[in-house]
Length: 117
Length: 116
Image (cartoon, rainbow over all chains, first blue to last red; front, side, top):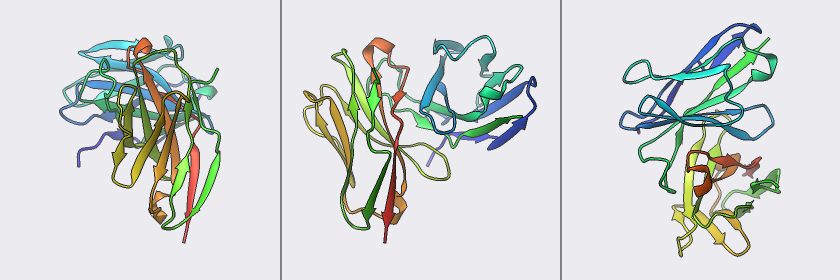
């Protein structure tokens, strides 16, 4: 069964360093998303991406964050100058149908746990 | 106000019994979608079931059914014949027309433990 793949599963970094979290969405999906889940808290939407552009972003997604689809398969989240509070599980998701449809099902990867020391 | 409220931090059920996980939501939109996801200890988020605000029938997917009470703004997940593999965190989520449908808003989750 097709699945969203995220690498690495766990990333440890020093405060102030840049990290890139990688995702391979389901192959025929066109809409991509990043969410994060701080330990013990809710899953929060960060950004959605379609046709090489950001469709929507939340207040959390500030200038520290960027997303890119560098090739036909990968979808990346870059965090510049990481802070302690960026420590969280980051989930990538993809969907085949556009967000404009209520029954747009987003399929999630297993997440990358980011630990900022 | 919380968009999605899951009042049960944890639930226990015996194998083969049915269990209901509560979810209430808050929206002024007429068009919205409600979702349940399962998060086992391995961490991935697994889509379980979807209910549209205009759907007249309650959604069902195998052992999962959604008890949708629109007037009460509740969308409870019912798992019939629980299995040990159902032990996981369960999240209720909503997407609203006013948010452009991109954003899934999640509740805090309910941890379900199934005992033999």
